[in-house]
Length: 130
Image 1 (tube, rainbow, N blue to C red):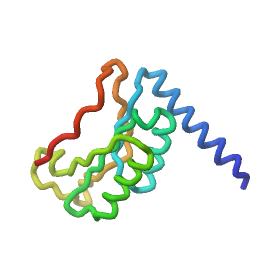
Image 2 (cartoon, rainbow, N blue to C red):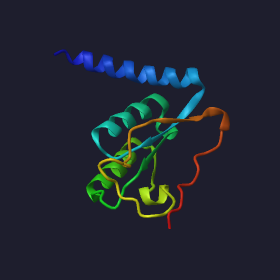
Image 3 (cartoon, one colour):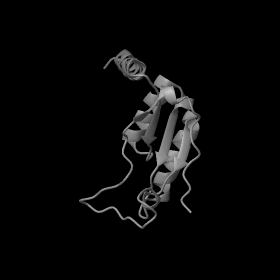
């Protein structure tokens, strides 16, 4: 294995993401950030492609999410310098207690959702889930 292939692949991914956002007119991304490998890789790529200030990571824990997982997402966001907020699944679904089940898994997923450049507004304050 040649280590240069990894570097070349990484740079190609970052370039592809940056190009996609530029061509579609988007400048920012929102990401479900669990701290797992999938969302962590997506967060690193997005931060490099768009700049850390243009990426917002949301932790979306449920009542059964281990504290270690929550901390992993927070630490990664801090290390990358991206925006971070936690929105518990119960809050996101209207405040009621929502428990994930095998057939209705509601955990955070690494789905980048771009925010249109034309809004030109700062990131909103994290939602309140009192």
